[in-house]
Length: 214
Image 1 (cartoon, rainbow, N blue to C red):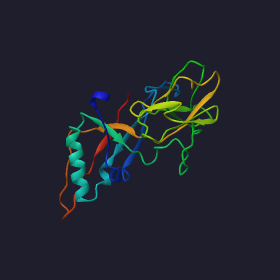
Image 2 (image 1 turned 90 degrees about the horizontal axis):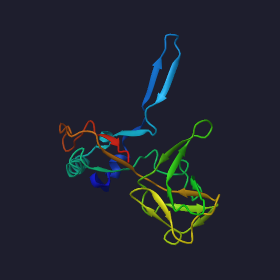
Image 3 (image 1 turned 30 degrees about the vertical axis):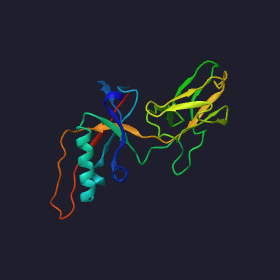
Image 4 (image 1 turned 180 degrees about the vertical axis):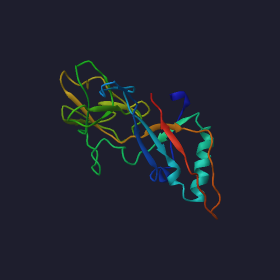
């Protein structure tokens, strides 16, 4: 994904007025008795968005067209800020280093993937986070916050937390993290239909985006 990905954020003012959310793929087999068997085709959900709702001015229209052209349509991926879901914390709460459990130390393990958990009563879903916002990641070991650059580093492209020598989490110590993140996406079309019917304004009825899986 790295070779075909630009580490650039889609215009934020347009993204904040978008529509979209997670998609799953479930296979359902119905038997003659009426009973069903359901199987998940995908281990992880895939998010889809429509950014067309956010294009309300001529300037916004020009910005999207320029962004689309630089990405060569569907060719290059980019970062997308999901207004509903871009934080490890609960809605409207600040992030803390205790937000998400990302692993347990064994005295030798150095790397931990950032993840965000959804649910809790029946079948918790852990979503890998691969595009943390640089400078936003806070980490704690055994409930005590540790300092970035001193105890650990973060890869903002892959979402990997790497502990440095002398700071490896001990056996049984929980490793938690708080962070902000973007979603890796690409345009899901090679054609933008631009509507210039309104004076000194414009619209792009649909700008479909789809999440890129690592």
